[in-house]
Image (cartoon, rainbow, N blue to C red; front, side, top):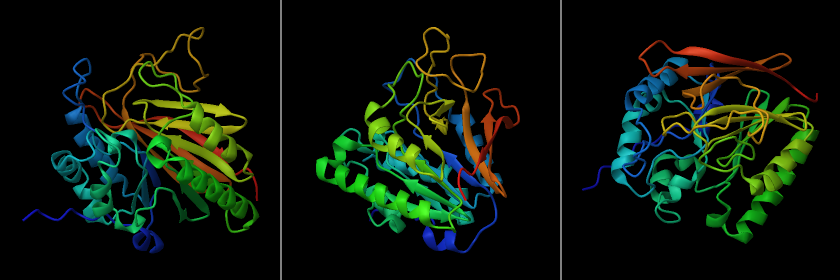
Length: 303
């Protein structure tokens, strides 16, 4: 008999009003055997999950690519071992799907995500409330969705952003999806389709505060039309080199780092009276202590 998949907490746990920060992480897949030019980060990744547990998140958002191969029971079992402490703490866990959940074929990881996150009820886009902040989760795998579901998602997004702009109880809106509209990665491209479909809509929302993406295995920070965009794909996948030369890079990254490859990390966010206080927690590759390498204040844009 196949062992039942562990179930992660969802909306009920979130509604209980747990204390703690909102935490964002992405790309927790392991380096695959095909990625022979990259170094695996198993030890650092285990420490990253320990630090995630220690942060005791009020809610955890995952920007996709939970595992390397979506249909693989072995890969999901490895993820479950890493995330076991979060599950036992009852951390509300809300992922979006990355491209690896669809590898090697579309929908390959559907049964595994459905078993672990039944609170999503199969939804590919949804929202959740954390204090005065609404987090909007979107599916950027447009090819896997198909035209009709892409259009339905965009209509839903338009309706929800307009509703939040009119709701006095909503202080700010953040959005998260997998494929970044802006990145200087030398391995993956910035997504023009999510820039047109998602980023343009979120920028136009009065209460939008920030966007979080994965796919590029690095930490990057961009501002476009007054809105902050963060690439936070540092959950354990092979670190990708970035184009850092001023004359060559495509986008102006506000975070300075001396090397082309960055680090495993996660983002912790606290709600403050005037906005959000963000800190980036780095897991060093030399077994050193975790450290905060960036702090960003994100003021609420509208009352």
